[in-house]
Length: 212
Image 1 (cartoon, rainbow, N blue to C red):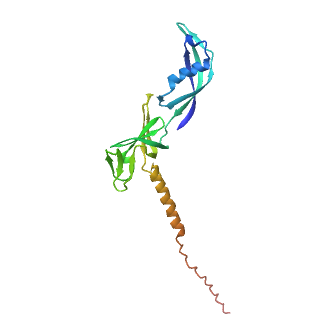
Image 2: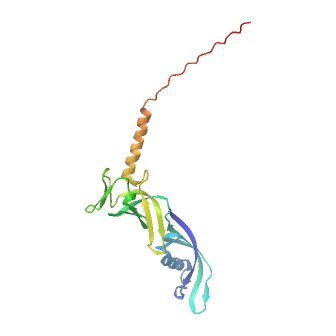
Image 3: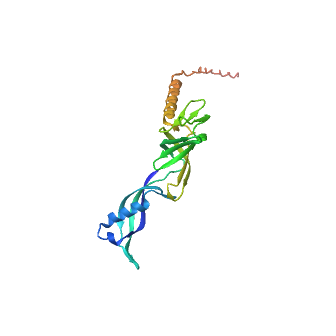
């Protein structure tokens, strides 16, 4: 999900910055251009980590600035389909819960939260299971799987679809209960005596003597 990526680009250094350290100027310009953007291939660019190399600049007619080819690294957040993630519920509405996953929010539709029938409590801003009584509300920690990824260009234009309707997914409290129940079932199975089958007796057949 988080990854360091090395990129190449051309940076325009204005003439009023010529006396400064070239790497620091290039880093400042790249941070303004890249941080916060969402790219279909890269994902969300969180931070420009550093400038690795700056080539000799070139001057273009009619422009007093210098243009330098730059090699630099960025930290990106790229959600992957079917990846399991953990996040925090930041908003609950009647059609689902929005879950914060680093720089992006994902939507878990009510149909993808649990197998139980769910109703929305507007006063508590919570989703409540009819049979189980389980609730989802703001600040809950959850584990989900990414089932849909839509990332466009620009700023904050990514959309993620999530599901929690699989084993060991959902609210962290639910998962702990499920794991505990599984362990108890295994203990009971170990304690139950095994039925021993009686050993079958082997009978030797007597050979008939041949009469001369």
